[in-house]
Amino acid sequence: MSNLIDLQSQIEKLQKQAADIKAREFDKTVQEIQAKMQAFGITIKDLQGTKGRVARSGRGKSKVARAATPGPRKGTTKAPVKFRGPEGQTWSGRGQMAGWLAKLIEQGRSKDEFAV
Image 1 (tube, helix red, strand yellow):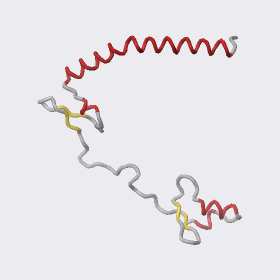
Image 2 (cartoon, rainbow, N blue to C red):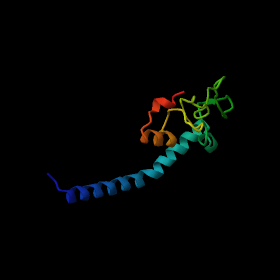
Image 3 (cartoon, rainbow, N blue to C red):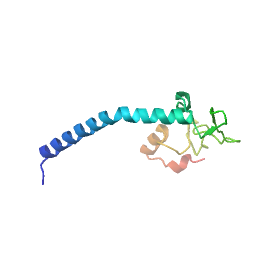
Image 4 (cartoon, one colour):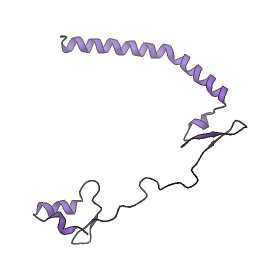
């Protein structure tokens, strides 16, 4: 079995080989991408910030296809309150336990006491 120093030496050699291959193939890959972009009429703007599927029109310009009725966005709906503290504090029961509830539990109180 190889020791740690041998393994680290092998890793270093392999990383150098990978960097050499990447450097040799970089220009060729860029040229291939540019050729495909030209063939399909893709612009830099098409690649930046498009969300969803790109629909192609007959003129070669892209339009972002959007759903007819978009659903709710992540983070825009509030979870219902499941716990309420003695001073009106609230917690939905999601994520890390609310600090006020954690302190009360440490004092020997039950989480169920504060369920809504």
